[in-house]
Length: 424
Image (cartoon, rainbow, N blue to C red; front, side):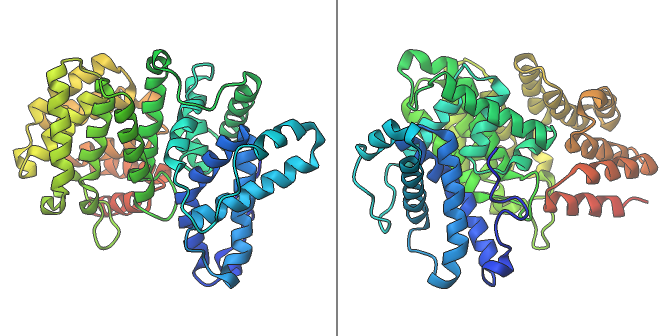
């Protein structure tokens, strides 16, 4: 496995690069890594080579940008440097001479000052390549989060609740499978789209989820990942306009993203839905999301993302938290459980049940999920809140402690600490 350029020691520290430069480089890495990998994969048809050269380009940026300044188009600069490094590598390796000759015929060198105009399509092709049915479902999602979302291996491991070493091996196996099976780097023909759609949508939603509430790192929200996931879903909708789940996922992300500016207060603490300032919600995104939900309802082909979008439509339709139609939310979660009977869905349904039937009813369901969700911090945070509402302070304190031990998002940690401190 190629060393991760965001791992400790792989890149110079911010102080070594330039005062304040490390944070800026990290932001560029988050925004551009997937684009560079996609551009190189399009040209060389080699995921390992693309990832390694993208990493080398970022190392070169750390070395040069502090003294030379950040170029006007960082992504194009990084792509050109990575491409040239790749060509140099291929020239040195005689066993890849044929591939080098093919790469040289793919086009003239790009101008590093010009934007990489084809990058969005390249990322969509990479998304479908990583979602090939020959790969195991968990490998498809993990590989795309790593290459397309620019997440580090530890971040991907956190998203799957598995050890970092396990995730690194999973990603390596997936890349080898792509090479061995000669999986083409392209958007598949129409008749192959349905068998890949569920995997593609799962990846897009996980990219969005990681942006909406990062599992680790110093930032509470990663707007770049949220925007990229929404952009990819819009491209999918253009490609597959008759697929209701594509419309459902786009609606879900828009209705969730609409609340972004109200989700963290000025002190960096997460603000729960019932306490958010609803005047700060993005009404344009809400209107578009509601229109998509209505379109899905007319199709009458209920699926997982459409139902989740409908839940968010109920929340964003309520002028105040007290006006939320929790009975509708619970009824929708009953349908989601039937479509996607997972422990996480059951946990979310329990939250709605607690609002309709009281915290004791919700806690009874939550306690029954302890086995599969013990390592999932929202489980312990939900349980702590229900115990708090029931006046069981000592048990709530222990549940908050467990949630804090597992949570990696700074805004969420601050929220849990505040709730714990307020216990009697």
